[in-house]
Length: 333
Ligand code: COA
Image 1 (cartoon, rainbow, N blue to C red):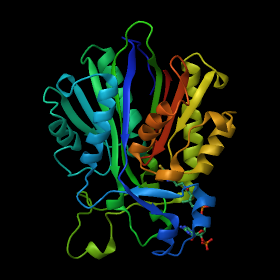
Image 2: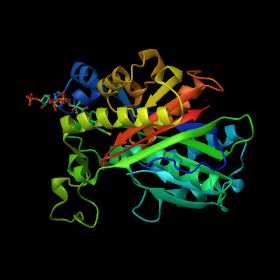
Image 3: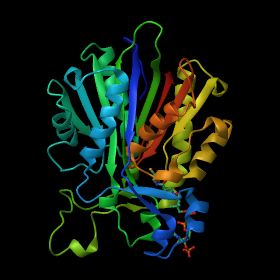
């Protein structure tokens, strides 16, 4: 699905991110399961990840990231019209994590809900809120990708436990003033024929966790890694190409590509296929691993603050996740 109608321009007025204090290194993981720092770094690029403390919920990380984004945007909590939290690790199945964030921020005038699109959730939220603002339904939106994946990882499965981490990233969107940047083109897609490649099979209504099945750990991430890898490269490359073309740009016009942070080999393969030099591709997965919906949001915040691009530059965000889902956005910063 792409942008067919162009309404009011929408810009990103502020970004923020928050990761838990506790660092879990590859060497520490190698003391728990049969793996090594060398294997993890060579196959994924990941060196360490952050793990939330026991009482630190997804909404807590989301709220911290949101406060930083709001401050940068110069918007008070009471002025927020819409809050969307993208997460597959909500505090509770209901109410939505966005409701806890609304409460913590005191954003009592906002409509708040969650979306579940795995690692693509932040860009799904961006497209939804961009459309609602450009249609005139809302003046602004706070979008957040936040995950506590450590609560849904099987810490005895070396094939998955080395990959994931916790964290949150946020952005404030609002109507753009003349001369400001804007979200130029967005793209999103889904292929429900591939639900079996990456899922948390238990804990929902299809497979509730009971006393009898609790030991089987159905409420943890299950993945066919090699298959996911292939689809990730193809879909992200296509989505990035589409938004670049629809924005009337070429890869050479893009100052920075910010891809989903899952695996350095996936990122390198996409950069290669887009003919994008490595120095124009932002990577922070060595510090955080794959934080699903939070990953591209944290990366956007870190890239913007590190000076990876400046006002007026064109950037591309591109993501991929369970579903399978994928999405991209071309933005003039
Ligand atoms: N440490 C050491 N060995 C490991 C290991 C680990 N943590 N995990 C798996 N292995 C072993 C396997 O058991 C296998 O051993 P075998 O050959 O004796 O059977 C071997 O390493 C190769 O495993 P394989 O799964 O083929 O490795 P791979 O090169 O495909 O890399 C992933 C595995 C998970 C890193 C890779 O497939 C991947 O990143 N896929 C995409 C995952 C992803 O990004 N998911 C999120 C999308 S949003």
